[in-house]
Image (tube, rainbow, N blue to C red; front, top):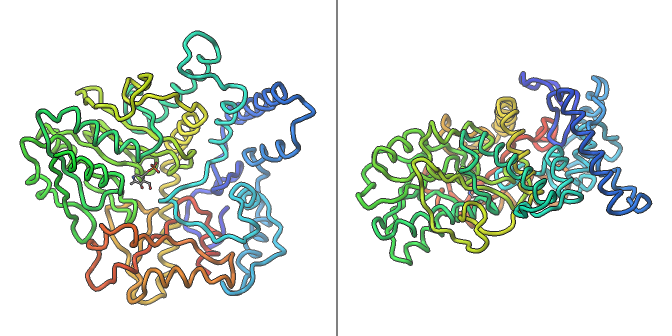
Length: 481
Ligand SMILES: Cc1ncc(COP(=O)(O)O)c(C=O)c1O
């Protein structure tokens, strides 16, 4: 939904989903969706008996179904109703009749009739795209076979879906689908890559390099390896949050086995120079791992172009389900790992355990959509971020953190000078107008690595991370009010 004053981001009108307007779907995708819906309905009927299908089942399906396109009058009524609230302190308007996209948001995001704050921290997680949910549902009902069962159709159906999803994920990062290993998320992938490579090559190489601003699961994996006798160099970052390539080069030793540097920082959104890091690592014969949980599906990532040997990916950062992710493990030149989970030898023996087809399928669909819509979403997120920053620019002493150019625009990270981060949060939590609260994430208490990348005059405790990718324009406007 587009409201007046918005920069020129292409409008999508025919199919609405929770994140706002989408491009009209080609006819075959409509029919595919109808087919899926029919399949689910038939499956439910078979499983539950026609009479026992609850009424809300039909209602629930409408979340993912295309909703009626809004016409211009409806858009302006909706916009006016939302924006007519005189200030953030006023009680939330109660007489708004939600239509179109807003209605979908209201139902699927369970906004509790505006009793909950507006959520803008998409670095932490995102809701499931209704199209992803559509793709997942059959694998929770009729198509429930074990994808590792090789002797019957139930297994084959699930296996086929898993392999299709693997293909979508591989295609998003320019990889061979055989190099995608499903895991429970980026935390497990990071553990698997760091510990697995270190353990496999331990007899020859015992040194790893990472940065001080990595996600905690990378830093903690390194600490565990240090306890086991490995040597780890934690590179500092510059005041813009980026590493110094000369420092990285100087840190590489003859016994360095792995360099692990994240693609996009989850706190301040800066993008590390992956291409230069990849080229350096390849030249020095050191494996290059990147934690791309915040990058895949948002910016272009090509493992060949960037010389990436190992990569961690998470589904729930890109509108896929939680509890699923992947590790990319290069096959040529081959990277060897000691598995951290042993058992039935699934996933090339690197990650045992029965896969969850519904999660895998959802993850694959999220990647397919992310690839298809990446350009559009990037422009949209850039416009939203600009709106958020402009909207806050009246407040004095607000500084945006991180390199202004090498960054993912959807992560807006601001320092409010002279204000304690906790005080800011408390102020926003005052329950005078629940609908106008913005859910900011103040991460300094659990994340101590980044503050030194901030200008010294700013109290690092004022470090907060509001981010707004895929948020609808009017929600952002409402939050700013
Ligand atoms: C950079 C980064 N790495 C790893 C993770 C962990 O991902 P997951 O929740 O899939 O385990 C996150 C999630 O916050 C992240 O932002």
